[in-house]
Image 1 (cartoon, rainbow, N blue to C red):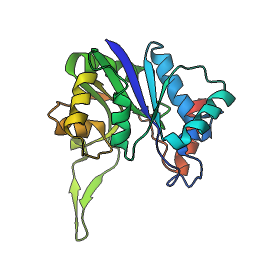
Image 2 (image 1 turned 90 degrees about the vertical axis):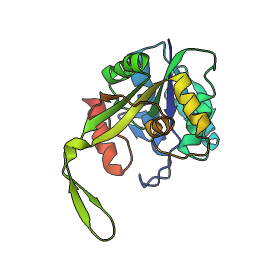
Image 3 (image 1 turned 120 degrees about the vertical axis):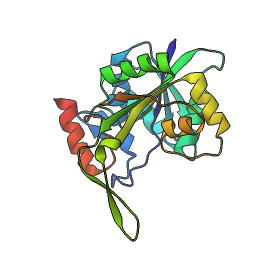
Image 4 (image 1 turned 60 degrees about the vertical axis):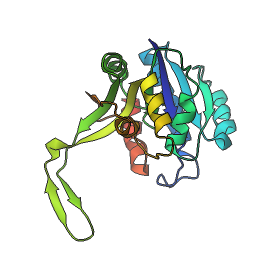
Length: 223
């Protein structure tokens, strides 16, 4: 089946304490988003990349692509008001009558491994979905404003991306749940009745969110 990767890159720099959108910050010599595109191209050059960015940032992105001589082909799509809207916009680029797979991935997770990418497509081909996760390392507690309760960490996991689906399934889920706003595609799929299958992620596959993450990414991307 045809393989797509929908790279969601509509984040701001608020928690990063930066005026520059975090996906455009330069780490290890390149903007984070270009590192992410390279990861998918290295995994499989036939993957059709769909980059979703706020329309107000399209010109900045084009300038960065030219400045850093990025030759990776991609389709550029305007983001929506929410992440869910942005994913819908990206999915709309994929033909309805085509049997295909789509990996939905955070644009600021540049250290995703080739093995994770390829396994996600393989498992989604067989089972309909494949979501990368890692086990918790720390103890956890569930809390509210009055109390907190310890929980068994082995019953929980941290969800990463890519979250890969047979395209017709995830497109249908987003169509059925048009008004839903979630930060996790697996959550949308689950709400629509799609069984979620987990695959082993990687602790290096961190999401650039705060300034400390940039220092970690610098090490990972140069080692």
